[in-house]
Image (cartoon, rainbow, N blue to C red; front, side, top):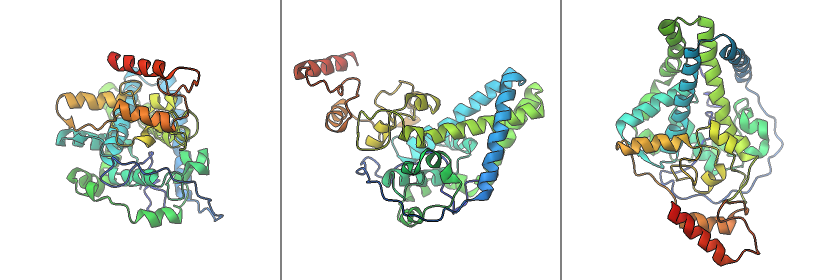
Length: 354
């Protein structure tokens, strides 16, 4: 069983956001709650498994650089991108936020990519993510960043859920996801599909297709690749809630973090995402270090992705001027000595260029 699939443990793995099927309305920023003193109940099974996983991944990273065949390294990178898209384009933007619609072939692809990522089934991942957005930075947030970097990164998976998370989670509407037969199939057969897709097949491919050693295949293409995408995903919960600027809403914890965005295929523009969670790009600039948006746009061109939700320049500009921290590249420099007409003119020119 997955080290984090225990119903008593803090949910899935990734950043998990949004609430009801109508995800186009952002909840107001939640005030940080005072966390009462209580005994933290550790889940030692998870602690031991994650300790082994990271030790094995370090060894796999060494083999990646020193002894694995280039085909094995390339496969590890390819699987990292595929599993990442299963989270970013699938569980996150498609299902948790409903920021675009996908036809059956694309939904099947995203479900398989998501299973490869092994961060719980889409339904469970989306549940945690919707709680994260609805009750952000409170005790009902699965990876409440106010409890520290370690907790929001991995610690939330090493201890029992906060009672408030379990209590408020009972009222979360997940009917839209349970109505999807693809997601019901994945959840029903997850414990059979996940080991096959995430561990067995990636280990067998290098051995039988280009005569790789079992050691390199298992530790590089499987464990190193899997652990790497896990930590990239967790950085959205931790680093992207701690280090960066807040050009869209300075009153919330999430920030813009370019480094996270690069590795997380576009998911690091987090201040924007928490301000406008329904935008399928999760960023103002779609193709700027945002591979997931490129992926969705490509499938939109062939009609497999459609009804892509986004935010107009006018709405973004008004929000930046009203609640931003003054660091926006176009509308937020906050120079009081700069004439307003010059700012407006720069905005018009930018729109012409677009």
